[in-house]
Length: 135
Image 1: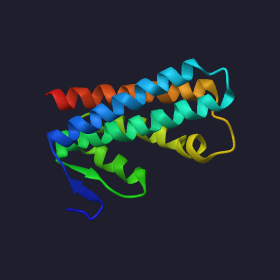
Image 2: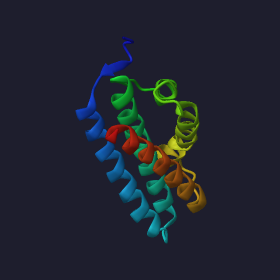
Image 3: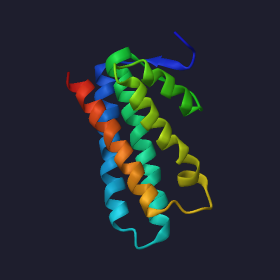
């Protein structure tokens, strides 16, 4: 097993799915309060965290391991191998990661449209995680 992965199973998958769903729910609420420009960054940042947790849930449910490391892009490779539609899920995950720095650390505001896109992408990953955890 790679030093950048950690063993996990269905219990951890359920925990990560619950976390992903919570991040996503709050992201949607925050975006609804987008009267303040910085709320878009917060919503997008929460969507990114939801996507990371959903990816972990999928990998725990299917591969019995999840990525551990600072480079979340490496976890996209693991996600790609986790399911038959892993390539598509990994592409969605990478779209989320493309806005991570701007959402979490940037001085440039993420637009409400981009934040809404991030929530849509996170929803796709959370839905896939639900399917994998419940199968």
